[in-house]
Amino acid sequence: MDAAPTAALKRADNALSPAPVLALQPLAAHLLQRIAALQTGIRLYNLLEEAVQRVADTIADAPLRAVLSANLPEGVETPPTVHDEVVGLRAELGRQLETAMEALARLDVPAAQPSADAERIGRMLGGLVEAAASADTPLQQVLFAAISVLLADSAGWAALATLAEAEEEKDLSGRFRLVSVEEAQQAQALLGWLEALMLAESGRNV
Image 1 (tube, rainbow, N blue to C red):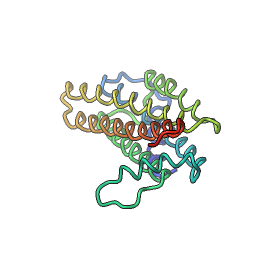
Image 2 (image 1 turned 90 degrees about the vertical axis):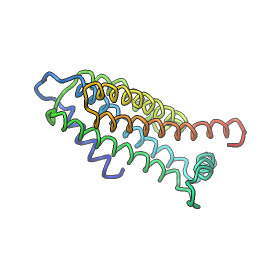
Image 3 (image 1 turned 180 degrees about the vertical axis):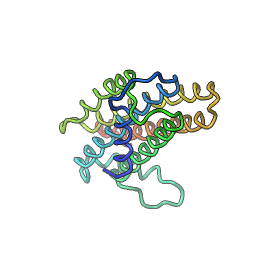
């Protein structure tokens, strides 16, 4: 696992660790929920990395490599490996977590601030992590879990951006909307992989 998401996860864990409960403004309270969801997303990417490694260089890997080859940016001739693509997507989520932690500090929230709602979000999404963690969980199902979390969190960030704008936190609103868009784009990319695997399973071309 790359260092950046690991460090961000540790700081986020600290932000959600036990501490005297303080009254939080709604923006900070909802931001803690988004931090919990980002943590889950990064952990799902860890499991996705393991899942793609299990099928690396096998016939099951071929549909994913075909998708990457078909979607090369202009001027790029060699597609990344599936593993490298997963690592890159996870690093992007790590940067989003850094953005969230910076926003938390800007809102002057203590370094360790518990939130029952954030913990509840963590438990809800944690069920997907638990299901995806088994070594016999098919790659398709790990992808589905990751897509589910990304889409749900993208919606959460969009709503948080609206709240930030209403609170006249224009800069934070813009940052939150960017995170929402980036997560939706990641979900779309993973959906392309899932569709490719399903088509290959049915004997159809990607």
